[in-house]
Each structure stands twice: as structure tokens, then as C-alpha cells.
Amino acid sequence: MTEPNVNPEQPGARDADRLGPRPLARPAVDPAQAAVFGRPQGVDGAFDKLYTPQQANGVNLAPPAPESLAEAFRRPPGAEGVLLERPREATGEPKQADPPLWNSTSDPWRDPGAGAVLAGPAMPAEDEEKPTKRPPGALLSLPEVLFGRRVQPKALALLGVVALLIGAAGGFVGWWVGDTGTELTGSATIAEAEAAKERPAGSVAEIAKRVAPAVVSLEVFKPGAESGEQGSGVMIDPQGYILTNEHVIASAAADPGVKVTAIFVDGTRTEAKLVGADQKTDLAVVKVNVTNPTVLQIGKSADLQVGDTVMAIGSPLALQNSVTAGIVSALNRPITAGGDSGAPPVTYEAIQTDAAINHGNSGGALVDSTGALVGINSSIRSSSADGGSIGIGFAIPSDYAIKIAKSLIKDGKVRHADIGINASSTVAGSSTMGAQVKNVAPGGPAANAGIKEGDVITKIGSRLVRDSAELTVAVRAHDVGEVVPVSLARDGASFVVDVTLASD
Image (tube, rainbow, N blue to C red; front, side, top):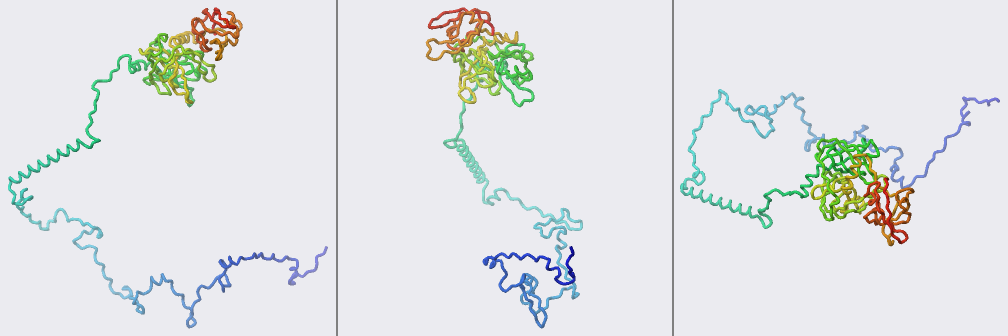
């Protein structure tokens, strides 16, 4: 295909092949905006001539100077048309010397603007004449200074006596006013006891002083853990055996890596080794390696009576060696406490007391008015969410606790008497109160004695059974292999069977 014959030098030869520029987009202008931002009327270009130079005889005159510069550099008023004085350097006239800042009599190093001047030299020059010393004149006496020469010595002495009397009277009045004070202030007469406070034998203070060294605090924690458990313990043997609750050292019994530390009243800390623990009775024994420890005297809990004075000693809420006092509120109280960490409930026969017991008192001592151990503090009843004391605390009797402790120290475990049944308390409104048999273990002591499901056990030996908790504590009060009479109620009839207790 051949191209058209076009002469490139001919004007407009290629303009026909080119596109023209796009038309400018000129939006409409708001008249109000144009009046505000548009050019002034009569101004066509982008800039307006703010000043048009004046001409005189064809010469452009300079614009007037700004007012600020004119005010600074113009002639002073009244000097218009007069030539200014030429500087002295131009005329060759000598320059007048400035007056000296100081003369020969002033200090040449002194600041002329200072308000003070230095004194003359301490020692006069050798060539200066020393001033002649003026002879001293006659000295005036005190009467002459005060009263001139018109007062006689007797009158002056009398005046001194009168001044002394006036001063004494003023001092007495000031003392009386200061001592009397207002109606709300004054001197107080406080009666102080001359003799020391008496702490006779058997007082709470005397018992606490004797018993506190035998009660220790127990810390149960795993190395590296941020927190642990805390309870109390009682030193029951000079060889270092400490009796406490099983729930205090439960984590140490389950995990050999958990450490138990005993803290004595003097602050001594030592490691305690687990000897044995019994979950069913909530009792345990640990041992420390100490020399000549203070051992608590063991009393007889069977001799207690309701109303006897008792004291609870332990470390409630980590407050070591705290002492509270109260009385025995009840005896032989069957208590079932919930087990820790999923363990089965614990049932034991307890001493009820109103001596304040809180968390951390567990494993501590309950002592009588002689300072002898009568119980191991174990649990409380509480109506608040934080489980604080409301005056209902329970302790395991010392007679039973020491029996369990001896078995743990000897064998490391405890064998409990068992009847071989599961029972529950009879419902309210039943004709017979007791523990109703739910099931009987085949071949067990109850089955061999002829006890059947549905029977209601009302007595074990000589002890009444009113609920399932009393059944448990009544059975455990006997030894393994012992034959005990059991009273039953079946179909409205009552009879007694002999049961040979087995071991659990």
C-alpha cells in the first residue's frame, strides 16, 4: 500500500491528522464567591499597581519613606532646613575626655555602681601622722544615766525593792493561771498500779506461756510453687513426733515432692518427715529432727464436762501461736466433715467448743485448765462464705487421737473396726430413730450375724445410735475382732445380735 504524496514543508500538511486540544472546563462561578475572592473593579491583570511614581521635570521621584523609618531618622523638631552638626572627627577638633569614674581617694577596684564602699587600710602608712588619742572623760553612774543627779541612793534602793515585789507578784499570778487553766484543762491525777500484774498458776497467760513452745506451725508446699498450705501441729513425743490433721499434710502424703516445714515459737524452722496419715480419722504424724523439744502433756478427754474451760492454740490464718479461750460446749458430738480434693467425708466423734477456731488452727492443741492436751482442733461450722469462726468449733478427743497416733508411729497405718454395711439416717417421722441398713457386704460381720437390708440399728454395745454418723463412730470405738451386741428394729420387732467386728 503506498502512502499519499504529502509535502512536509507545506504548512498545514499534517494538521489535518492531529487532534485539537480538549475544551477547557469552566464551571460556573458563584456571584457571592466572586465578590469576595475576585479582583477589584477596574483591575485586569494578576497584580495591581499599588503605587504610581510621581514625576517632576521628567524624573521619577522616590516614594515617601515609611513612617517608622521617617520618625527614627528625621531631624528633630525645629531643625528643619538646618544642616546637622558634623562629627568632631571630620572637623579635626580634639575629643573631650570623659570624666573619670573615680578619683584618687576612692578605691580603684570598687564598682562605681555599688552602694557600699570599702574602709581605709587597717594600718596607716608610715609617713601618715597617727591621730592623737583623746583622753577619756568622766564616766556616769547608773543613777546619773537613769535619773540624772536628782535621785538619792536610798530612793533608788527602794525603787529596786518595789520592782522585785511587782515581778514576784506577776510570776505568781502567771503560775496560778497556767496551773489552773480552763474548766476543760488542768492537772490530772492518774492512778498507776504499783505491783506487777498477777498471773497465778492456771491463768490463761500462764498456761499459754507453758504450752506455746509445744505447738508448731506447719507449712506444706512444693518447691517452685508460689503458694502452699498451712496448719498447726502438737509435739507429743521427745523423739520429735508431731500430731496434726491429715487434711493439713494431704498433699505431702499424695506427692513425695511436697515438703513439710515445722516452725517453732522461737522462729526455728526445720524439715518434717511424714510418718503416717489416716484419712478416715483426719489424723497424721510427722517427725522432726530436734534436740530436747518441749512436749505437751497429754490429758484425758474422757474426764471433760460441758462448761469446762479450754484454750485453742495454733496458727489461724498464718498468725502463728495465737491463743483463744472458751468452754466445752458439747461432748461426743458425731461430726461429718467434707473431704479435701475429692476425698470421702470424714466422720469422727468431736468435742464442741466456742473457743475461736479458724483456718490454720487445724492440727493445733485444745488444752484444759491445767494445760494438758484434751483435743486436736480439726473443723468448724460457719455460716459465712469465707468460713470464719462463729463460735462452733470441733476437736478430736485426745484419748482417740493418741490411740491413732500410736498406731501410725508403730505401723505407719491404722486398722479400723468395720461392721460391713452401708447405712443412712432414718427419715423424719419414722417410728424408730437410728441408722437404716442400705446394703450388707456378703460374708461380712453384719451378714454373718443375720443383719439384713432395711433393718434399723438403734444401739452398738451400750451406745445409742440415732443416725449414720453415730453408727460409724460407735463401731470405730471398738477394736478389730471384738464381739459387740447390736440392737436392731425389724418389722416393728426389736432384737439383739452379736457381731464380731472385722477390719476395714
